[in-house]
Length: 321
Image 1: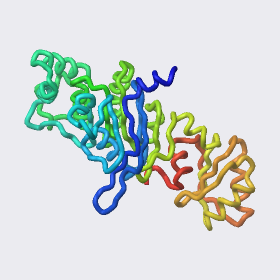
Image 2: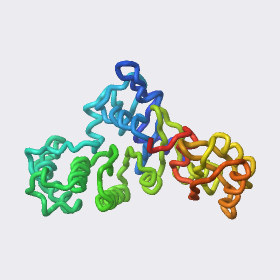
Image 3: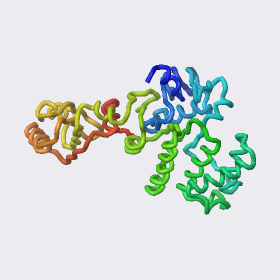
C-alpha cells in the first residue's frame, strides 16, 4: 500500500497532545497517535493512566493544554462542533435520558443530529431490534439491566452513523453474559467497517478483541503494536511467578543466573517473575536453585506471556494496580 493510501485511511491523528490539570497534574503527556479506518484500537492501562482524558480530548469534551488532534478529518480543537458529527461516544457512566423511554432515547438523538422524523423513527426501531432491545422499546431506562443500558448507549452512539466510535471502559461493571453480548455487537459493527477506539484495563479484552493496542501509563504510550507482537517482544514463551520467603531482589538475581533458559527475572510486588525460553523442567529447577540459595519457595505458577507481562516489563508493576 502506498504512503498516500495510508494517509487517506487515517481517521485519528494526534501530535504532542497534552493535558495538564490545575495543580500541575499531567494526565496526558505528548501523545502521538494514529488510528486507521476500520480497526479496533485499544488504549490499555491502569486507572489513572490517562486513557479517559485522551478520549475526552479526542471527542472535544476536554480541552487540551497543548498539541493537535484530528478526528475524521476535522481538527477537534478548532472545530469541536463539526467533529461531533463524525464521532459516537459511549462514556463510562450511564448518560441515558431518564425522562425518555428506551425508543425515545434513540429517536431524539437522531433528531438532534439532523435526521428527519421518518428516518429517526425507522432507525431507532431497527437498532432496537439489532441490539436485542425491541421488547423494551416503551420501557423506562431505569428498568434496564446494566448490560441492556450499555447496549442502548452503543445503539445511541451509532444512531447517526459516525465514522469513529469511542468507548470508555465499555464492559466495566458488566457480568460475563453482558460482556459477551456487548462484544458480539461490537464485532458485528467492526465487520461492517466501523472504526472503534476503546479504553480498557482488562488485558484479556484488549488481547482478544483489538487489532492494535497502545499500553499507557502516567499519560504516556509505553508500547504500541498488535497484541501478538507486543507479547513476542517479551523475549520469553513462558512466565514463571515465584513466591518465597526472604529477599526477593536477591532471589531474582539468583534465579536469573542459576535456572537454565531464564531470559530475565525481576521482583514484582511480593513475587519474582521469570521470563523463560521453554518450560520443560523449569519448576523443579527454580525450587532447587532457590533452596540451594537459602530461600523457601511458598508458591509457583506457570503461564504464557500476556499483555500484563508486557506492562510489567515496561513498568515493573502489575497492570491492575
